[in-house]
Length: 450
Ligand SMILES: Nc1nc2c(ncn2[C@@H]2O[C@H](COP(=O)(O)OP(=O)(O)OP(=O)(O)O)[C@@H](O)[C@H]2O)c(=O)[nH]1
Image: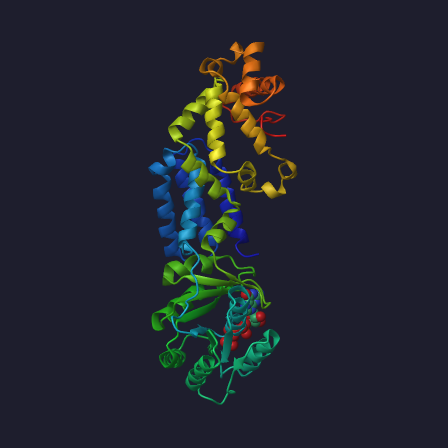
C-alpha cells in the first residue's frame, strides 16, 4: 500500500503529541524533527520538506495552538492542513470547454501509464459525468500502443480514432478532433507518444500537436513509483509545455509517497487524478484533504475538531473543566454543556466521526436516544435557579412540580438526579486519580446513553 511507511511514522509522531494538555517549544521541535525525517524517508523533495517543516513549526508555536484547550490535537490539525495544502488544498476538477469538445492531451514518458489512463479517464467521464468521450491514438512510436488503445476502446465500447503508425501524429490529432466535433463528442482524449527520457524531439512534436488542436487540458501522466524521478520529469515537461494538471499512476503500488507530496509544490500544477490499479475503473479524482487524513489515519476527526472549535467558547470551556474536576458542576453548567453538544449536530453523527468508531463494537451498537436528551433538557429547564445550583433542595413536592412542568415522571426526575450525582462522583474520582488523565474502570454512563 502506498504511503504505508510514511503513514506509520507520522501517526506514531502524532500519537505522542495528541494527548498533551500542554505543548512547549521543545515538544514542537521534536515533532518537527520526526516529521522531517519521515518525509525525507518517503522521498519527498528536500526543499519541499524544509519549507513544510518550517511552516508547521511556525504555526505550532503560534497562538492558535498554544492558547487552545487541546494543543496536542491542534498540532495534528496544523500538520493535516499543511499536508493538504502541500497536495493542492482541494480537488482540482477537469476543464470543461465553453464549446464542445473539450480536448485533453495526455503527455508523459513511456510506460508511465498514458494509454491506460486515457482509457480510464474516458470511462470515468462517461460513467461518473455522463459524458460522451472519444479516444485518439496518436502514439505512433510504440507499435503496440495503438492496438492497446483500440482493445481498450472495444472493451469499453467507445470509439477510438486511429490512422495506424505511418501517419504524422500532428495530422492524427487534428483529424481526430475534427471527427470528434463532427460526431458530437463532448470530450476527446489524445494519447500521445512517450520516450524513455525527456528529449527535444519529443517536446517539439508535442508542442506542434498542441499548436494544432489547442487542448483545454494538458495532463501529464507520471508514475508515482519512480519517486523523485517523477518529480524531475514533471518539472521538465512543465517547463516546456503548457501542462495544466498531473495524473499520478500506480499509487496502489508500494510507493513511498514522495511524488504525490512534492509534485504540486515543485511544479505548481494540481494533481487531478490518481491511478489506483491496472483495471479500467481504478482511477480516482484526487482529493488532497482525504489523502492527508488517510496518511495521518484520522478518520473524520478534523471535522469534529472544527465543529467543536466553532461551537465552544474556549475560556468558558476551561472554566467548566475546572468545575468538573472539583466536582462542583451545577445543573446550569450541565444544561450549557448539553446545548453545546447538541449544537454540534446529532449525537450519532458526532460519534461516527471519531476515528476507529466503525471498528469499535460497543460504539456501533450503542444507540443514542435523542428524545432522551430533550427530556433531560426539559427536566433541567423546569428547575428553579436555586434548584439548579443546589439539587439537594429538591424534595418530593418540588420533584412533582418539575415532572409536571417537563412532561415527565417523578421517576425520571429521580433518575436524572441520581445520574448527575454519580457523574460528579466519577469526575471527582477521576481527578483524584491524576488530573483527570486516567480513566475509571467501568467508564461513565452518560444520562443520554441507553
Ligand atoms: N498498478 C498499476 N498499474 C498501472 C496503473 N496505470 C497504468 N498501469 C500499468 O502500467 C503499465 C504501462 O502503462 P501504459 O498505459 O501502457 O503506459 P504508456 O505510458 O501508455 O506507455 P507508452 O505508450 O509506451 O508511452 C501497464 O502495464 C499498465 O497496466 C496504475 O494506476 N496502477
